[in-house]
Amino acid sequence: MSNSCRGGPPWPPLDRNEPRGAATDGRPYNNALSHELLLCCARTNAAPRIVERLRELAASEIDWEYLFLLARRHAVVPLLYLQLERHASDLVPHETLRELKKHYVENAARNTVLTAELCRLITLLADRGIEAIPYKGPVLALFAYDNLALRRFVDLDVIVRKTDVLKAREILSAEGYTPTRSLSFSQQELLLRTQHNMQFSRDNRRLIVELHWEVAPHLFASTVNAETLWRDLATVNLNGAELKTLSPDDLLFSLCVHGSRHLWERLSWICDIAELISRRSFNWTKLLERAANADNERMFLLGLFLAERLLDAPLPDEVKQRCDADERLNLLAENIVRHLFSGPTHVPATSREIFKYNIGVRKTLSARARYVVHMLRPTDGDLGARSLPSSLSFAYYLIRPFRLFRTKI
Image (cartoon, rainbow, N blue to C red; front, side):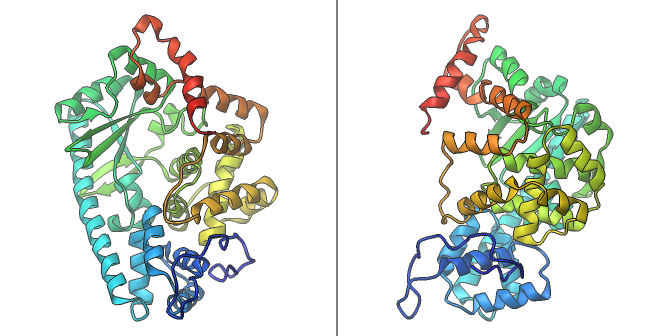
C-alpha cells in the first residue's frame, strides 16, 4: 500500500494479507485498500487531503463486510461511521451505512448507561470516605474525543489508594458486584502485593468494574507513583459532576504503558493517543525526562511513534528527534502493524511473541530484568486456578513458571 492517507512514504506494510472475497468483476478484493480506508476514518477530524483520499477509497472496490469486521475487532466502529457518514455517505452502500449507524447508536446508548454507573460508584465511594479516580472509559472519551459516543468501552476503571482496596471491594460487593476470580482473603492480600487491579462484574457481566491501586504493575513499568498521582489530578465534568482524574501528562504516559502491556493489539488504543495529543497540551520536555528516568523511554516513544505514523498525531520536533534516534522503534512498529491488519479475527500472541516484544521494547538490562521478575509474579489467574493455604502462598511463585510454559510458545 502506498501510504496516501498519510501523504508519506510507503510505511507501514499493510498489503501482506491474503485477499478475501471478490469484487464485482470477479477479482479478489485488495484488502490493503480497506486497511487504508480504516486509517483515514480512525480519527475525529480529517484534513482535506485525508477526506480526498477517503472518498477515493470509498469509491473503489471495498469489501465492506471485511472493513466492518476489522473495525469491530479494533473497537473503532464509531469513528468509521462518523467519517463515512460525514464525507462519503453517497459512496457507501446503503445497507453498510445503516449497519454502521446501528452499532454507533447502540454504543452511544451503552456508554450513557456505563457513564451513569461510573458517576454513581464514584459518589458512593466518596460517601464512604474513599477517594476514587475514574480512569480511561468515559473520562478518556471526553478528554480525548470530546464526545462520549466516539469511543467504545466495555468496563469501568477506577483507581483508589492501595489502603482502600479491600474496603472498596466490600462496597462493590454490597452493590451486587462479584469478583471475576473467587479469591480468599489471603489470596487477595497476595494479589495486592503482586499485581495492580481486581475485576468485578454484575448483571451477567453487563457491568464490569476494574478496581486499580496502580495504573500498571510497578515491575512491568513505572508510570505514576502514588504521591504524584494524587497530587497532580485534573478535573473533568462528567454528567454534570466535577470529577478528579489523571492529568494530561499522567494520562498520556499511562496510555502508552497500557498499550505496550497489551502489545498494541487494538487500533483504538493508538487512536486514544492520537486524539489526546491533538486536543491537550503537554510538557514534552518533562515527559521525555520522566520516561528516560523511569527506564521506559522506548515504551513511551513507541506509542507516540505509532500515533504519528498511522494517524498523523502532531508531535513536536524534540519528540520526533528522539524517535528518529531509536532505530528499534521502526521494527517494533512494523511488527505491531502486521498484527493489527492481519484480518478481522484477533489471534492472541504466543508466550514467545509476548516475551520477545517485551524484551525488545525495553532498552536496558535492568528494565528487562524487572520485566522477567514481573512475568514470574502470580496473577489472579494463577490464584484462581489453585487454592492454597496462606502458609503455602510462596508456592504460587513456583507454580507460575509451569503455567507460563504450558501456554503455546
